[in-house]
Length: 456
Image (tube, rainbow, N blue to C red; front, side, top):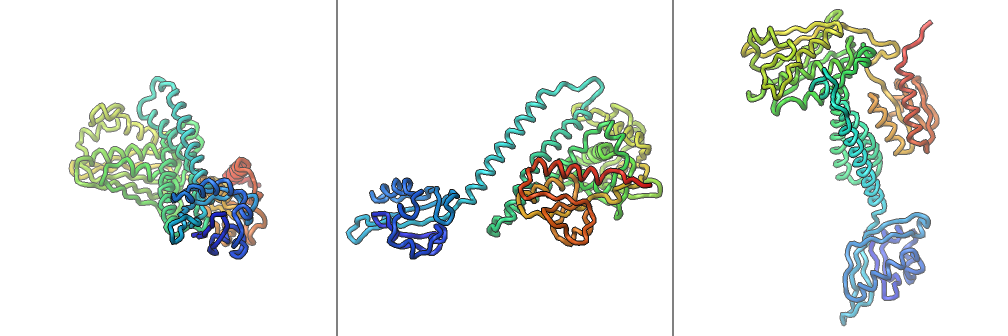
């Protein structure tokens, strides 16, 4: 905290070391000299406030902006409180000043304000687009429309979260107080959860062309994206348990198709548990020879023989028509059958329900022997480093900053020298590279990593 005393000529009578350092001059250089001599940029504002203090009025918590000898071309901001200094007779003979610099805080506040305005603009723009959507064509029911709207929402959430994560990375690189760092950690945890939720929502739209192209899916990576959405459709108190294979396991079905199938099964299990003591829904995936077995089971009331016979018929439902179209299980059956799999059902009154999806096992696509990519980011510019890391994470990469990780990384993004022993794809970016160019370079590199390996 900066402290000083001015006389009626606005001359420095006393000043502590902290305020002297902010001004860029030693304590001795201030004493006996006026604000007009040392800080001419601040003089008009200082005079206006000084008139009020000399009249006997304390002026608290106001802002001063200007330059100092320490940085002549850089505007700085202080929050100050001025108090009248009186002699024994009560006359005002000077000013006691308490000052604190808030330049960085004001800069961050302005950045956040601009960011909020940009978010608001994007939300309003997207809302207008959604209002202008044409009604669904004949044959597209509520389930298809839900998938489309969920995918739109997931896409927009992902776009809005990227600049938020970039700014969080930038803030955490600063030397901030521990209490502020803890608050940032909490915000980051929430942003990470929302990012996973956005990824899961994008998986709910089944595009026939995309489903035909994406015929090999690694279930571990799929689960990390879909889990948040599945947890959020269960009633309060119901547990979602997962049993995933220890090793990378590939299945011959697209990510949207598997998400839609499991989403409907988990949602039905949650509906069956409503109004009952807290239950458990389990999603278990395991490889079994040439198949991958996906089981969704619950501890609910189970089904009688008649319901089991008809549950996969289109439009059959045991729920009120206002909350069900009767197409959920028919959709599951169609998606699994289209992928070359089968659906099995086990249930009995009072013993819960288990749906088993037996899907063809797939080999890893050429050029992608692992379920995800590892990227090393070695950038000196903290904002550029944060942008690169956020973009790579959004594209499913695990991002590392430890130089030791560069030896095994699939992709390296650096400003200059490549760490010794690195073997992955290298992108070299200047410290002042425009974000648009960075995004284009990253996209091209990731597409190259995904391309099939050419062998001769």
